[in-house]
Image 1 (cartoon, rainbow, N blue to C red):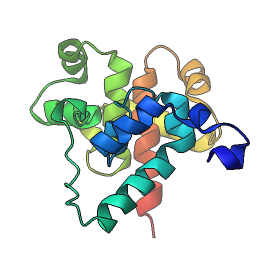
Image 2: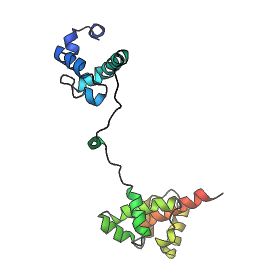
Image 3: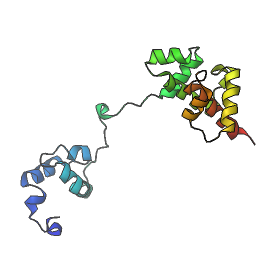
Image 4: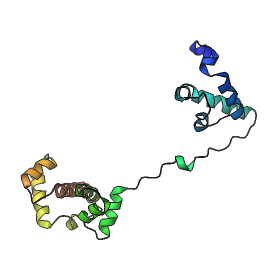
Length: 180
């Protein structure tokens, strides 16, 4: 490595670091990071090659290579599906407003979560938007296909919310997708 980069060997790795590598024989990146003298730059520049050399040495000497063990504290917990939580609460009988209040989220966020499931055909629109509003919003969106939610809101006025417009848009999209 030193010859290839035109430097002295100690500039690649200090002697103490080489001695620690020989003594510890780190086989995984997480172990290599813990060796004094192996900083981010050396890990990035030489880590892969060092691990390959150490692994080859261990194989040549017929040394046992332990399986990689993940530290539980390093594992990130799976993120909960926030849309699914909103859906489950809605199916349990809570209104979008109550879900928003309980989850400390904006009503439009909850309506967006539910619109996702309406768009997937997993939730019916009738329980979310009154029939009269559904017809009014759908008529506008069908006539103005390229209208943004803001434009639709301006045109439809105060009696329709952004969430209702998004729910109807998702509903129309799901109908479009299921049409032959």
